[in-house]
Amino acid sequence: MSIDNFTAQNIAGDGLKTRVIAIANRKGGVGKTTTAINVATALAATDKKVLVIDLDPQGNASTSMGINKYANTVTSYEVVMGIKRLSDAIIWTKVPNLSFVPASPNLVGAEVELVNVENREFYLKNALNTGANRYDYVIIDCPPSLNLLTINALVAANAVMVPLQCEFLALEGVTDLIQNIERIKKVFNPSLELHGVLLTMFDKRNNLSQLVEEDVRQFFGSKVYNTVIPRNVRVSEAPSHGKPVLLYDWKSPGAQAYISLAGEVLKREKELAA
Image (cartoon, rainbow, N blue to C red):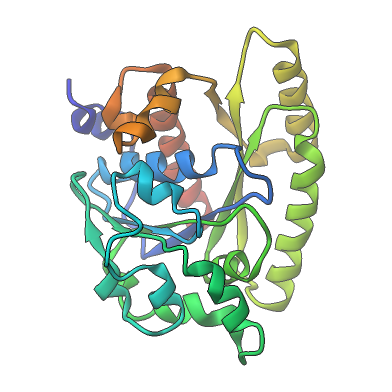
């Protein structure tokens, strides 16, 4: 059975207008990029038209998709800054229905360039208004910090997904992020919702992982996805091959978890739209 057939048979969802989901966490190394590209791949396999925007200057999502972030191409930097239109930066991937806007190290400069600009928080939202409506979902991979790029993503988004690594200090950083999301909702984007908190790098052999899961579920309640992403070597290997784990080894526990997560995402989308 192919990955396309598997996901199409196991994930159900209704057609909705374009939805923008930001994947954000102020901490690096929590599975944010891995989640962005694999959720996008799973959604694309259900015949949803999906666009991934790599907004992180490190460009890890671009590398994970086999895209050379140093190539002479139009990137998310030019799109955010209004130099190029969104359509100029879109790359078609090998995954049917999945498009991609690569990152550039120049995104670091966007921070400085936007500092004294009027309505600086709305640059990405304005850019998406020029062509994102052809997609069912736009997935934004944010930098691991609450900087102007992340704020632009949250202002442009309908919802935010927060990956959270199963480690001792995980909750400390996430509670600060949730407070900042509420501030952005109050000041810039009243429609912004917390889509959910995703537990990543879960090791069932480790008591600490189980304790963290209990604490997170007690703190966030139903906002925590039922799906937990396990610590899995195939997930770690996939980026070096320039592929989502769903294409690298779709039978692996990590790939199966992301397929399950995509089903939850679509279910919550229906609930948010109700």
